Amino acid sequence: MQTQIVHAICIRAEDSGENDKICTLYTAQSGKKRVKLRGVKKAAARLKYAAQPFCFGAYTLQETKSGVALVTGCTPYESFFDLTADPMRYYAGSCMLESLSAIATEVSNPALFKYTVECLSELGFSESDPNAVCLFYQLGLLRLCGYGITAEDTCSYCHAPLDLTVRFYFDSLSFCCPLCGVGKHVDYDAYRTVRLVDTLSKENLKNFKLSKDGAEGALRLMGNIIYKITGVTLRALQTFLVMQA
Ligand SMILES: [Zn+2]
Image (cartoon, rainbow, N blue to C red; front, side, top):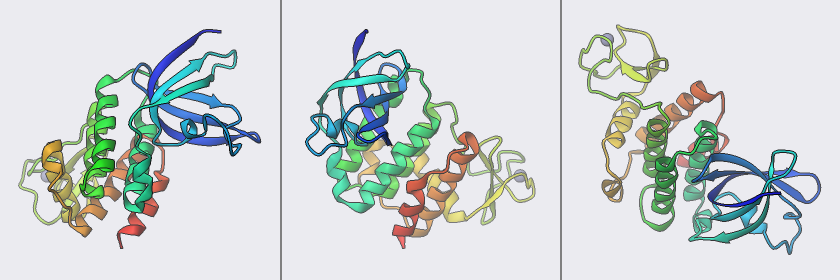
């Protein structure tokens, strides 16, 4: 059977049988890919780390008849495991990986791969606000997958200025006024936060701290948007929101 080496981040892991794991890798070469790691639930397993979310490395894959490739080796690069030591960073990162897992496809998207590595580095190796990094990542992820959000200062339908009452219309992924009335009510703080983070560059992100209310509302909205697009509920988001209190 054919083998290949892929640059990948482990974004999801599930138990399979007594000792194995089925993982979802996000690869530079072919987008999302389901793989199997044998025996990695045993304490001394050689590839244990490779079956954990946030592992970033060169995975050696062996194709199998079942269609789920077997991981036979993994050379780790700079790993993102450090961020698991801080609960806020861990849950922000988990939200990012779950969002990626929900939205990404099995098609190569080199820009998204690079962006994911950069944002995880930002989360893991800087003092940046975890809320801001998570929101920044989700907005970019949507944009790079063709679901860019329109966050103007006016209603996307009648172009009236948006003041304290704002709605988000999921079909057009844009904010609108209550008179146009085609969307879900969004807190003004959440709208302003999304709009602000959407205009940030990664360099600006470093010195940026979101307000508590703005961050909570904006992250909740991102969870709703991802659910509307994919039908996937972000499990880590619930815990991340509870931890904000
Ligand atoms: Zn309007």
